[in-house]
Length: 320
Image (cartoon, rainbow, N blue to C red; front, top):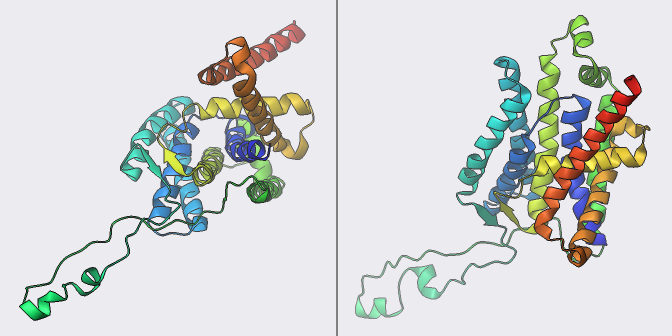
């Protein structure tokens, strides 16, 4: 159960990002499918190059946030719909992630594979060279990778759960404080009425840039932490991330109903944990009704479509 909660809270970070773009600023953004991969790829590459996990995570999240900024910039600068702009950026990020890792996937070395240097490797010659007059100057290269330190131990003893939950609550609290400021209030107002923000004399494009950058920053942070948690980064791990996160947001909205707790920031958190529990139950007991693990994303997409359709039909009945 602890592992399920850990994975659910890691997903909650990405779900918060999707909640910001789809609900808070009301911009349909598919960039998270690519920024999630970029976050994981950058984090793993930096870890393998000797960076600490804190700096690697932060830089990975910033790289993902830059992807969201590019999407918003294309949309606002060239007047391209956000959905189309995000599809183009998401498609490009697939190749960018492969470029970053120089491979479709990249593991995090947990154990040192460096060879112990022999006398010949250290000195550059053998003991007989001094006696026989050999030319010596042997060239050796140490092969392998040093072990990388990550914050997770994967022992299901509560250590990882406390770490992930603390980080998630800290980020949620900071963003909640931001939304209470004047700038945060205008950001929320942009999602509800763009014209009202423009009337106040503020360029609404600023909030599009801000919203998508912050949203993808959180998605990239989730991707980086998940790569450290799982021990690898894969170019396909972000496929369907937007749909999964939307399902988490909708589950949270169903659970909370009409109550917007902390501006709705708890919707994706609770929804992501519930989604992960449902996913685990489906994979464990679904075989009894012919369910396969590969069917989960299909069911998730059907769930999102059915909930949205039900809400639209309910609104149309009320207006009639």
